[in-house]
Length: 75
Image (tube, rainbow, N blue to C red; front, side):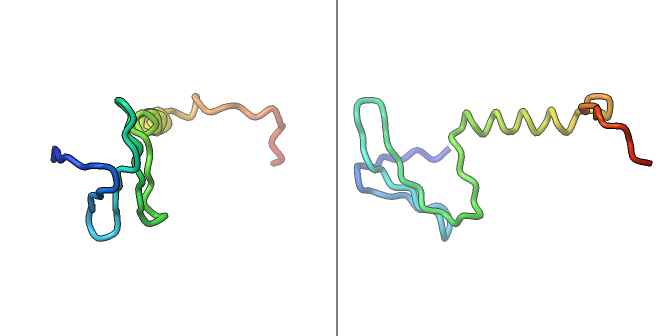
C-alpha cells in the first residue's frame, strides 16, 4: 500500500485519467473529490464489499434457489 500525506487542495493522480483531491479535513473525517471517467465504477469500500458478497451469492445460487412464477406456462 502506498501511504502519502496530502493537504487540503492537493491531489493524487492514479493512472492517466483518475485524480483524487483532498477537499476538506474536519476532525477525523476527510472529504475527497474523485475525477474519473464514467466507465470507472467508484464505491465506498463497505458498499463494494456488499456488492461482491451479493454477486458471489448470485453466482452460487442454483436453479432451485430462483423464485418460482405464479403464472402458468404458456406452452
